[in-house]
Length: 295
Ligand code: ARG
Image (cartoon, rainbow, N blue to C red; front, top):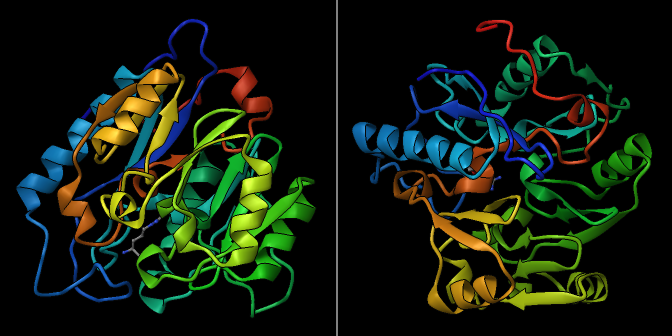
């Protein structure tokens, strides 16, 4: 696949994502309840779904970059977890599970090669951070905490990016990253499944989001919240009809891009697309990234 970037639709802010192709995607270990080494993904189908997702994101107006996955790192197809990008800087992920730890260096290498600067971690080995726990809503970062990300890591993000952080404690092991139960839509609206959080998290999010689309656990189990928004298009792994009706009433276009092979590893579309504009910043204003390998 050609790595040339696609331009943003006129009038929409530039939205850039980094994906990792499924060259070595597999399920060989089990670190979340979705994964079973007895239910391995099909290689051809994984590629077909991944290619279709890249095409759907580009058709929605996003600029898509990608890099190949490496042998032995079967979860690399979920680059969202490798870091958190703010403007032209990033914080590298600190994975909870040893099976994924080497991914962080590969993600960081790509970002460094493309002009981003790394913000170092403080000397505290007890901090964990996986990018799937970090979402932006308006002027705040929402940060899941529990299985994969520690509260002190959220404080670190708040400090280095100078942004308020609302922490959402996760209570259901099936929703081990916040991006499986929360999807920001625009400055006022978000789709979310509060049953995946503790009481404190539910209260904090209810105060934050003026127009919520609250979904049931059953609806969230389809990975419908694990979606990304490009302009007014919501690119989703699946969309139960009640959710579609509300999104369309709000003026969004729903684009379903099925990723069933990736769900076998417990990841959907948001996990597969690292948001290079999570906190906006100077590069976003400056225009498309130059890709040194394809410039
Ligand atoms: N198998 C991966 C893991 O358990 C899936 C990652 C999903 N990523 C996400 N942002 N929700 O870590």
